[in-house]
Length: 301
Ligand SMILES: [Zn+2]
Image (cartoon, rainbow, N blue to C red; front, side, top):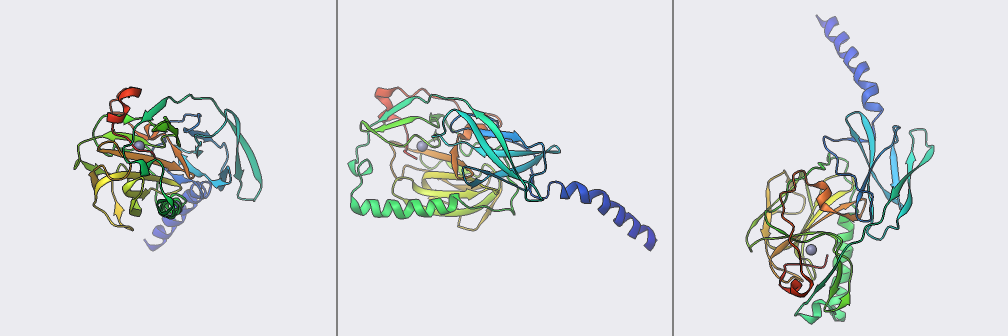
């Protein structure tokens, strides 16, 4: 009996060994985001090999194993130029290889908003000290790389409601150009619950100048989500959350024109379109007319 059990264990480990070692550095995943090779999109690129590391724009990139194939999951910045982009793969022997993918152009529409609090458009010196400190704090959370988590890349919508501002809008606040919209806005009444759209660890919480009450969730391997303008924050830093667990409530804290959730997704420290991570898009898109934009819930993230 003893002999048989040892033999069985040996057989299993010799069968499983090569299978695991060939993807030792790729995280096994059960879903992938939608590939969209445009500025602000995600490039899902089959590596055709068993690379142990991938880099794009000097940032580490997620390597995922999906249905027996290895893929690089690359966040493309909104500032990316159309054309050929390069990904550097490193093999277990240390050799590097370049893999190219083509980014096509995407024109995002303009959005003009009126903010009544002038300091939220042109912050004073004290505000700038605070803004710089807070952005350093958030950037540290965005550059987290946690390998203990298996990223879920088809997510649930974090709160129910119409989408009031899409990702990528070219923004003007009180007629002054500002950074493009780096997330998805979902309009909902103040107090509406917000749920974790995928499992993760709470990496940061805070009350920030522009973002108001904010949560950052780390989903592993450079996939990190952001929730802003909340009424209440119902979780603490370091807590593990599961899909569907309440993390807070919709509010109108920070720079807003009404209650809504601003939801951002970061991949290799790049803000990408959250719509690419939603399985069933239950959100309804509302057209934001330029002259009534001030009445629409929004934010500047
Ligand atoms: Zn927003």
